[in-house]
Each structure stands twice: as C-alpha cells, then as structure tokens.
Length: 317
Length: 203
Image (cartoon, rainbow over all chains, first blue to last red; front, side, top):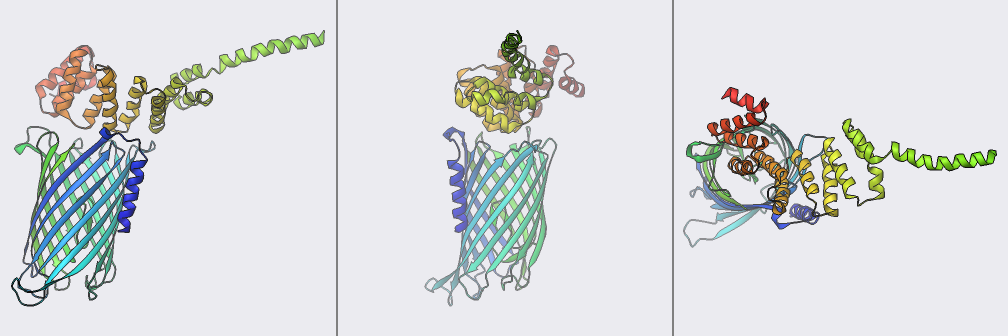
C-alpha cells in the first residue's frame, strides 16, 4: 500500500505542477470481460473476470491509468485439499511523464506502475453441500514496476527497460512468502511506415527461496508481438490486429502492456494470442482477444493449458 | 593649448564611442546578420542583453524563440514562445510560433490546441490551418485531414502545400484517383515538385 501512496503523491505532484485546462485532458474509460477454461489441470477448472479502467492524458506531457479487476477462479470440485475457488481483486495505478530532450530525436517516458492484489482462497472444511462451512485464506500481493522508455520521432525504434518487484504474502503459515524481481528489456521496431510494429521483450525473473516455487529461482522467456494497423478497405472494418507469442518459461510475471500480474504459482511454458480492434465511431473502440497458454504446476509437475477470450469496449473523450 | 586640444579630443570621443558602439554592436542588426549566416546560437545570444535589460520585451523574446527553434533547441524555443504568450496572451505570432517546436517534438495534441485557439479568433489563418494539418497527418487522421485540406484548398486555391496534404490523405485512404488529381494540381502550381513527380511517375 506504501507503493500506491507513492504513486498517488507523484500523481498529485504532476497535477499540481501544471497550469491546468479541463479541455486539455484526454480521457479514456473502458470495461472488459475475461473468460478462461483450463484443460488437463488436476486443480483448475475455469476463470471469469470483469474489470474497468480509466486513463487520463494531459496533452502529451503525462498521464495516469487506474484499473480495477475482479476475477473468480473455480477449482475442480472433487479435490478436497484444494480451494473451492479464489476471488482475486486487483488494483493497478500507473503514472507517467513524457520528456522531449533536445539532444535526442525522440521522446523519453518515465513510468511507474503499482499493483495491489488480494486473493481470497475459499476452502471447504468437510464434505459437500451448501450447509457446510467454508473458510478463507488470504494472499496479498503488492508490486511496483518502474519503466524508462524511448521512442524515436520517426516511430521506427523503441526501447525500454523495466524492473518489477513483487511480493507475495500469505495468511497461511505453511506457505512461504516469495519476493520476485523481474527485468524486462524491450526493443520495438516500426516497419511499413510504422503501420507494422514488432516488439521483442525479454522476461528475466528471479525468485526468492520459497516452498511455493519448488526450488525454481530463475526463469526467462521471450515475448514477441507483431501489430498491424489498417488504413482503409479492410476486411471486417478492422482498425488493428495483433499476434503475440511467448517462448521460454516465466512465473509470477508482470506484464506492463496488459497492466497485469500472473499471481498463480505455476510456470508458464508458452503462450500465443491474437487480438483484433475495431473502431465503432470516432471515440469508441472494441477489442476481441483470444489466446492459448501452457503451464506446469511446480509441486506436482501437472501440465495443463488454458484457452481464454477477452473482450473490451472503451470510449475516449 | 595642449589642455584645450585634449579637452576637445575627450569631448569628440565621448560622442564617437556611443555612435561606434551602436553601429557595430547593435544587437538587432547583429542578430539578423548572424541569422543570415546560420549562426543561430550567436544570433540568439546577441539578444541576451536586450532581454536582460527589458525582460518583458515581447519581440526580443519572440525572436529568440524563433532563433532557438532554428538551431534545434526546441525546449528553449517553447519556453520563449510561452513567455511571449504570457506577456501578450492575444499574440497570434507567439501561438503560431509555439506550434513550430511542438511540431518538431510531435506533440500533436498541443499543436491542435494552439491551432484551435488561433482559428477561434482568425478562422482562415493560413499558418494555423497548415500546422493543424501537420498535426492531423501525425495523428494519422486521414479522413479528417482530407476533409480539412479540401476546405482550406477552397480558400487558398493557388496554394500547393494544402494540395500535398490532400494528396497524402487520399493516398493513405487508398483513394488513388483523388491522390493523383491532387498531385497533378501541385505540379501546375510548382512544376518539378519532387514528391508530386515521384508519386505520379509511380502510379
């Protein structure tokens, strides 16, 4: 929570340091729905989630993003030692400042993201049936993710370095806490007059010793994203499309593009996703994304995969 | 006799020194001379004394902003144009000038905001429209740009620059026939225009 206070202070400093005009703010708000099904997992069954976000940009000088997401994970009902389900509540606050140094032919952005997540794991005490008691164990996760980025004016080259520190604490004394450090060097290249964008991001994640992660202390992965923006005469009136893939292994990753944390203690061993964006008028857009992810449960070596669908609608004003 | 001569010399030199000084080191003349030699940094520095003595000299600040822009010191240019605007909030010169370094830094929203403020009081100001079109191109608002360029072309039918933006917007929207027509009109106004010639030879 201390981190969130720091972000709020920075936002307050940014807001009070400007000569404001209401019409100089650019706002965007949106809602999203997530549905995920797990295959071949001995524990997990499905996930559903809903979230909302609000972003504000003051001209090109800086801005903030706030998002709030609630997810519910259902476990396989026949395993009594596992939770019946998990309720995740995730708050993300992000602030950024843009600089245009004369010595560089591009824009430098300082960005600071913070995450606060509460995971309530609901256990069934004995037996089954609605009259049986359920108790809850809480996991608390906080994360901070500063990022320094550079984008050249020609929009053909992008680079950033991000560092994320996340801390997972459990009410359950049998579960060790774990601290996670993540470095994410990133390169991006604009092609075809920047209507195509290729982004490569390495995930270098180190974990503190914990019985959550079965001796894994280092993981690394490479994420490749290709985005294409359309101009005119587009099939289905698409505005943009994106294809992304992750190779390698990563755990407890923080994804700064999605503004999300992977809070499940399972090793992601690969992922692929495709997304499409439509413009529904001048100010409204819709995104549909589908993806496939493969995982390995570290303690049991259970290998499973998930298929998900995400849909969001946002409005700018 | 010697005393009298010395007195006269001192008297004459007292008149001559300021004349010499104002002739050789007039900061305005110096700044224009150095600008013509593309020594923008020195040209801006030559105005320093005026601005130091008259911190609210609007024109000196505007001119230093322009010279800073020319030498690529865009943040200094923004500061000076903003300062000139603070001194005279009605100044269209300052607002139009401010757009130049903002365009260089691709701060399209700020360019749009300043262009809109100029157009509020001067609806068909040519420079505001052209700079707004540059912003629309930067934001890739091709339909907006095409509509905008068409309207400005009606007011400035002899102008080639507006037609260039019209042609580019139509090209991006795959309206190739309209793009070719606009580039052909550019060549009528500026024979040998490189971009227009290259486009028309390709398509």
